[in-house]
View: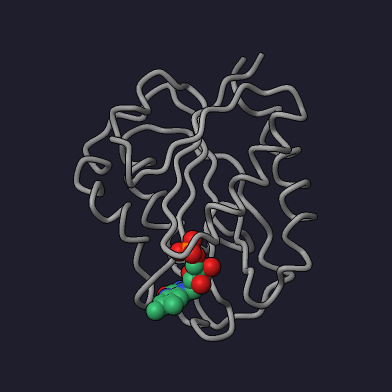
Length: 171
Ligand SMILES: Cc1cc2nc3c(=O)[nH]c(=O)nc-3n(C[C@H](O)[C@H](O)[C@H](O)COP(=O)(O)O)c2cc1C
């Protein structure tokens, strides 16, 4: 059975709602999933997991969610060797169209620098925004969810994305 540690940060509860939908889908697919709110957890609680999902909303013109900011220094020093990590971020592509889901890049950069393996890149084609630091080529560095403007697509995106990442996790 695949064991996955899921860590999220959420200011108004949107990311929490979305990540709980993802967790339900993963559990229904047979994974063993442990869920942590990073507001009440430490980065070292990622130690037991070779499979991780990290989720954050984006705030303040391209910043990480506040509870992630609190642990970010520790996060940047963490050794991700041997770990496979999928990222999910929330953002608003219309109001923040120059900073859409920038949270993905804040999480991705230290993971790559510290030897983690990133999975779960997601096509940009069904979104409309001007700029995002989280895009490489024609993909985001993880799943982008916009509950403000495209919540009708959230469940479908989560289904596709969880089906995409689950086979790539160890176990
Ligand atoms: C003050 C404020 C700043 C925001 N800044 C950004 C941003 O820079 N980029 C973006 O994509 N979304 C931005 N958003 C949208 C949030 O990411 C979005 O509302 C998200 O659903 C919040 O999730 P949460 O309740 O889990 O924190 C911002 C929202 C607010 C209210």
